[in-house]
Length: 136
Image 1 (cartoon, one colour):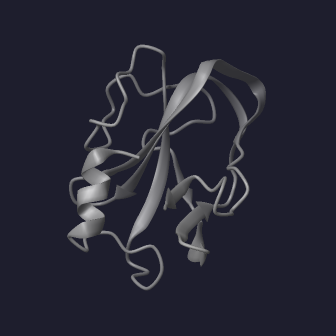
Image 2 (tube, rainbow, N blue to C red; image 1 turned 180 degrees about the vertical axis):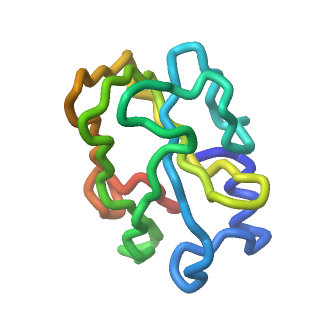
């Protein structure tokens, strides 16, 4: 999770359940991108380009926040770029609009490529141990 996202949660600036005006997106990036916990916002710098991909990435569907034991968590539905020819090393989840604040950075560990096929991001199981966003 991005550090600025943690502060935005404490400031009440991000709402994943009741504010339907807030949209979350995921953008893909090349290996030249510098993405880490200090990332504060979406940027087009080193974003992938190619057939089947539009700048800004895909809109995510939020799986409602919930709790298990002492852990709160949320997830997103998997997302796919269909018939895409792209290579990505990582991704940024961000809130679309305003300053496009960062939520979380994903590092794929290596370049991932699709050639005239589906490029899919499968989010982990939505539970207290695996969900993409967990607060313990």
